[in-house]
Image 1: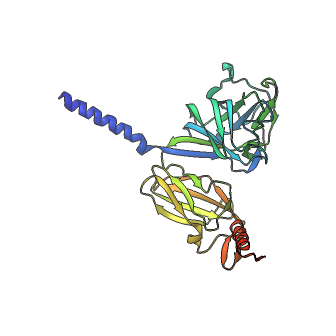
Image 2: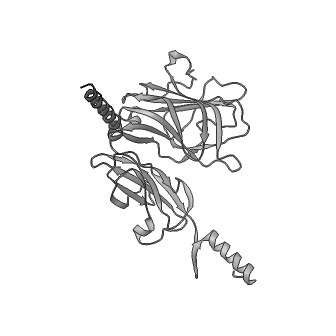
Image 3: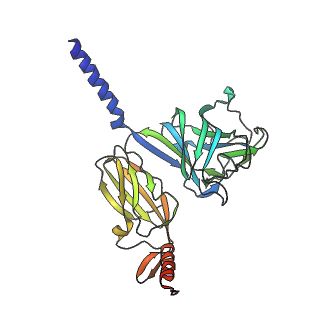
Length: 339
């Protein structure tokens, strides 16, 4: 009897351990689709210190969720500065509030418990191109009705080497983003309202299909081949997906319709094959993957690629760079100019 009870308990433990995998999936909610470049966060790195407070309204935040990570969308940096940077002593605080805008430009010390902030990250952040994920030390239990303040502080204490990373941001018409930088000591005076607020991604475990992720070519890729494959990761709780593709943002042309998913993994499609011809050169295309479990859908970020220029010239149809290489090679081999 004892062994039987143990077996039942063990079986129940295994079953309960499997339930989260069956019921929940990694979802991503993105607030902001603008492509205006901003230095915030972590504040422009020409300063040794800085802070930035971003308020996202309850309408933008949506339903209640347990947020495990946040991310900011790093884009290209200024020529001559690092695209990749390791920044030490970075801190992120969060606070749920009733307000829809900041009441003032004042700095609110997040270490003062009276101000109601929670420290969710304290450490080093590796900045690369694309979404920079910041894993929260404690999940944020968002209540589904409040606005959310994400308060970022850079305590690096140096501006050398200059790390002028930039982020995609969306224009805002009200006072929902304020920031300040400084040297010598951490600035605690009044900040400045900034009208381009960084786009943010919220990672959370939720019901329904996981949000499609990990695009290849990477988002904002330049010189994509005119017959390029589009690859992406399909996660848990997904039975099918659609792919939308086109030159408008958001894309509205259905490229792949109701493709079957047997298990999580990497999937791909080729727009040229689906459309029956090569993509136009030097053209910006947008694409999006929509996952479904049969009743609930989950939309990926809207990604984009820009195709490379090509030269159509017998016996070659190739990229400009490849064609130039071939011409130079023939000149070296034959001594005859082909221009």
